[in-house]
Amino acid sequence: YHDPYYQRHIVGTPRILAVERTLAGERIRAEANYTVIRTKYDGESTVFSAGFYRDEIVRTPQGLKLQSRLCVYDSEMIANSVIYPI
Image (cartoon, rainbow, N blue to C red; front, side):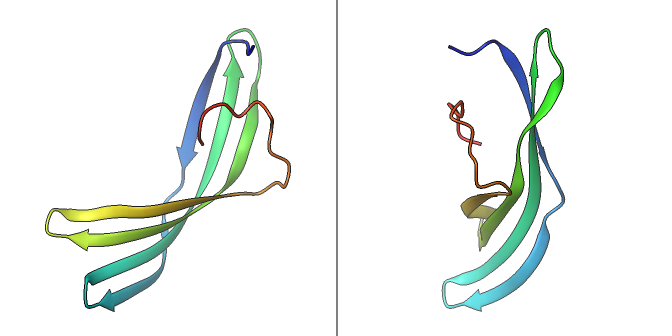
């Protein structure tokens, strides 16, 4: 059981690491920092998780599309109360 809470997910500006041209098209590798802040209805806000995303983005005829996203936590300890994906 978990007390009710609000959760705010903040993602920073992506940083492009590489642009690769392949036979299939263009692939962009990027990283962006993130923070998840959790606030219980009657309590203080706390940082629940922080780290960065490692993204692979591909160019399609419909525009840029996120192909994969890897979430890398700053801490080795992951709260056992993680019941939803970050």
